[in-house]
Image (spheres, chains in turn brown, yellow, purple, green):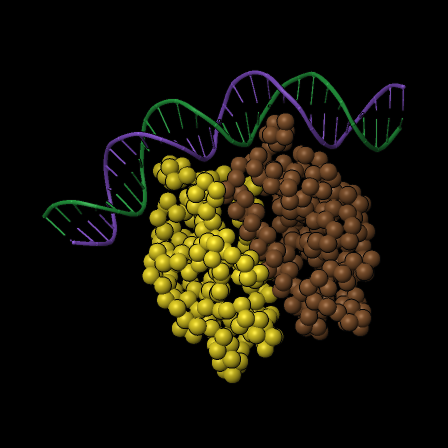
Length: 187
Length: 187
DNA sequence: TTCTTAGTGTGACATATCTCACTTTATAAT
DNA sequence: ATTATAAAGTGAGATATGTCACACTAAGAA
């Protein structure tokens, strides 16, 4: 379990054994079953999560009750309702298991201790945040430049594994088209 | 000039006079006229920019030559083609003045020195990156949940000053609709 | 197996948005 | 003041996508 975390961090900053041991003290492991919620809209957000295995969806529900998938989180991804997490306010999104999932949990308090106690980890989170920002800017560009079919093809190319694991109706919700339209596109 | 930068940073981390003096040595000031380019697609990205005054647009041009505004940057915003900047690769977006603009310029090298030399600044950039990510995630949600009219109204509410300063044809490009459609929406 | 539920495909029509062509109105330059 | 240029508005038809209704298939539970 912990190996995965170490590998992941060391892609960005190398750690000594002692340092990694220190890092580990800040995380707890949790396991969830398909359909369980890690975060519920309207409630507090205690943790940010690092996914060891499984698959999560981050969902925003609009006024009309329609669900929209803001992002999927698979192995090696960090996920949370980050605004609610950093500002300790109510969640505006829910985080739910699409598959049975194992995660490392990080309290905001421990996140801060980690950054204070080990500058390398602050460096690590900075790089993660920067590339997270870039990734979501790319998704915006994809919206601006492409129609539903092209966006679907881009997703196919970029995350072929996702397409195997997720029902198409969920992919539609992520791509921002109706499931009927997506169905017609793929045929 | 420098006051603006100091105020901006101190919203997140307090600085002593010495520390701020150290910070300043990493920046250079530049002035640009309307229509000038700070970054050109296909070229190297030397700097990230902090906007003192004026207005910039970050533009992605698609295969068909159509321009899409990825973001506007006004006073107190940081802007660049961050992927190209961090990875020192060719720009895939251009950055152009919508108005005469004054910026502080930060070389990647100096960005790194700043983070290494003063942990507070790394903290500052981390917070900026985190909230930048959150902001662009919100824009994605706005796309997923709203039609053109609603997105326009959200923008109006959220950045009323922008609407005064930019021609509607540019706003259309930012909102991802044709200028004709936007024109019909506002009437 | 049999039943139930989740996922998928498809037809018909409604709606949003785009595109192209043209006019009108501002704004800047001489 | 006059002319050029940028911005904005509008009509008409084309296209993309949404919605609703229904049929079909696959997969899990009894």
